[in-house]
Image 1 (cartoon, one colour):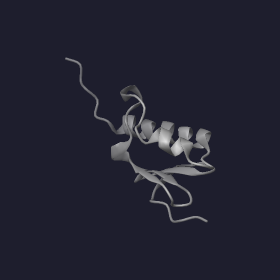
Image 2 (cartoon, helix red, strand yellow):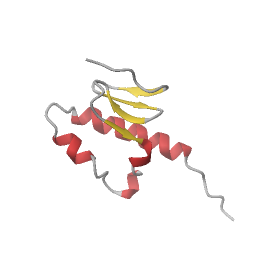
Image 3 (cartoon, rainbow, N blue to C red):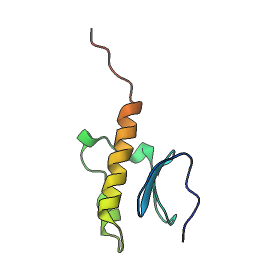
Image 4 (spheres, rainbow, N blue to C red):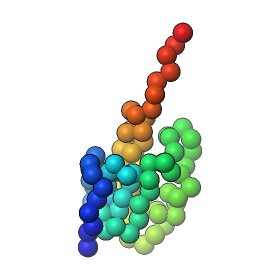
Length: 83
């Protein structure tokens, strides 16, 4: 089972993808918008452990998707000019 992913697809793993929307399960069952993805220094995402515990979740693939999504967010973040 698969569903149409949001475009563009920045990265696609075995079970998860990073799209313009955020992190999406390839089967369409779960999705996390970029607005709910915390930066790497902000601690764990509140939804992450719940998704990891779900039966059949490929934890390594989910972690890879989170890493890619955080990279996209950090690249898009405005930089602070030093004065």
